[in-house]
Image (cartoon, rainbow, N blue to C red; front, side):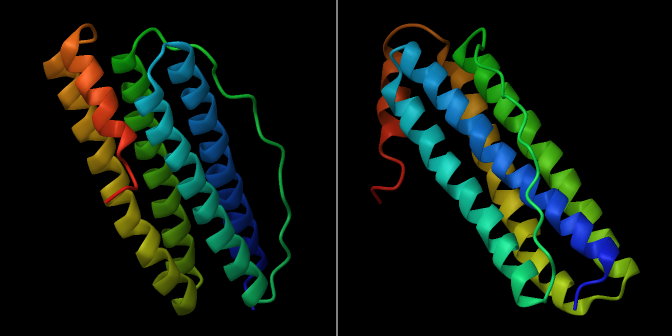
Length: 164
């Protein structure tokens, strides 16, 4: 059984993950509006991944006999000044999620909830991958610039996510 403190913390993280999914869907809509379907594809896949993270936590709370309490989602931003600004926001957001997961892990340590610690190890490693992917795309965008052939090639590359 989850403690009340951990139950609240897990419910908060479920909200953060669903909010992430919603944010990435808004970012995908922006990318489509900029005629960048590959960027939109990558972001829509990110949307699905974040929803999967939320459901993994949701199922864990249920398995531990906790009460799942879904919270309201805030409206995400709809405009970004450029593809670089978009991916700067992606990286910033992933770093914020990492901080939330670390805080949740600290709560599990405080509560001596070993099962939660094990589950959260997966999320900690996942965040390393999330930040690395966002950082790589951002740095490539900075090198390529935001206009011309390099951006088109990058858009096509991002369109291939999930096809490997």
